[in-house]
Length: 476
Ligand code: GLU
Image (cartoon, rainbow, N blue to C red; front, side, top):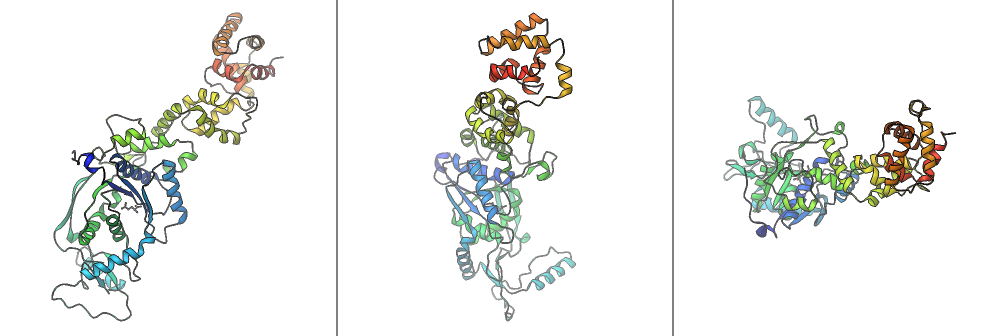
C-alpha cells in the first residue's frame, strides 16, 4: 500500500524526528538502523533530527552506555541538530505537566498499595477477567472516593478513556486500532513523584514537537497509551512508524552468537562507515534493486513508503561483500593509514619496503575488511616463513636453474611490470617450463604463500634487491 505524503516543499520546514535510545548498553545494529532511518527522514525533508537519551531507568542506565551511544552515532556520522536531551534533566518539566494534569482532572491520585493492586488482579484472574486496575480511586461525577489512608504516598494515574478506541495509520504497518478497554489507568508518577516511562516519552515528543516517531516495533503497545496521554494534553499527534526488528541469519532474535551486535565492534573489525551505513539502509528498506548507494543518494531516495513490513535478516556475508566493494573504491592512501597500525602490530617493517599505498592497491581486491587487508598486505613487509614441506614440493631440482636465471636477469631488466612479465616468459621458454612451475616457487620464496596476486605485479612491487635477496637464500 502506498501512502501519500504532503509534497516535500510543504514538509521542508516541519519534519522533526528523534532517536531516543535508553542508555542501558551499547548501540546495537537495530538501534543504529532506527537512528539511520529517523535521521534520513529528517534529512530528506530538510527537517530536524533530535537525539534524546532516555535515562530514567536509574538501575540500568550508565554513563558508559551514554558514551557508547554517542560514539556509535559519531562513527556512523548521524549528526543530531538538537540535543542530546537527557530525560533525567527534565524532571521538573514532567512534574509540572503532572501537576497540570491533576488540576485538569486528566490524572488522579491513587492510594491503593501495591498489595491491594495485586489482590485486585488476583480477584480478576480468579473470575477469568484480564487483570487491570479497577478504578477505585478514579474520580467520577457523583462518586465518593474512599478515605485517604494516613501515611501513604499516592501514585498518579492517567485517566484513560473508558470507551472508544485508539487508532492510527502506522507508517509501516498500516491501520492499527486498540480498544480503550484494553488499557489500564497507567501509573504516570510513582509514590516518590518520579514520572514513568510512557509519560516521559509522550511529554518529550510533545515538547520537542516531533512530527514523525520512527522506532522499533517493540514499542507498538506503548503507542496507544502515549496517544491517549498526548490527546489529554491537547497535543498535536505525531505520525508513528514502527520498524520490524532485525533477526539473525537463522531467523532468531539478533544476539551475540550472530557475531558483533555493537556497532562499534565493526570499525574495530575493519568495516568502513560507508559500507555499514549502506548495509543498514537496506535492512528493511529498498529502492528498486539498488544495493550500493551513497548516503546522499539514500537521503534523496528515503521515504517511508518502501519499508518492509516483515523483519529484516542480518546477513554478515552481505555486509562483508559491501565492505569489500567500498574498500575497492576507497583511496589507497586512506586505506594505508587505516591498515598501518594493524600491520605494525603484526610485525611489519616499512623501511626499504615498497610504498604501502601501492601494496594496498594490489591487495585490496579480495579484502573484506581492513583487518583482512592489513593481514594480507603484511607479506610485503615481513620476512616470509617458509613451510619445509611446501619447499620440497615446489623447489624442485628441475626449477632451480630457472630460478637462478630469473634472479640474474633481475639485475638488468627495466623494472616495470610489462618488462618483468616479458622476462618471465623468456625464462620459461629457455628452461622449457610452464608458468605454474616457475610462478609457484617464486611465490613461495618471495612471500611464503602459494596464493598471491599476479606474480609479475608482486615482483614489480618488491623491487629487484628484495627479490634477489629472497631468492639467493635458496639458490647456491
Ligand atoms: N528508549 C526506547 C528504547 O531505547 C525508545 C523509545 C522511543 O523511541 O519511543 O527502546
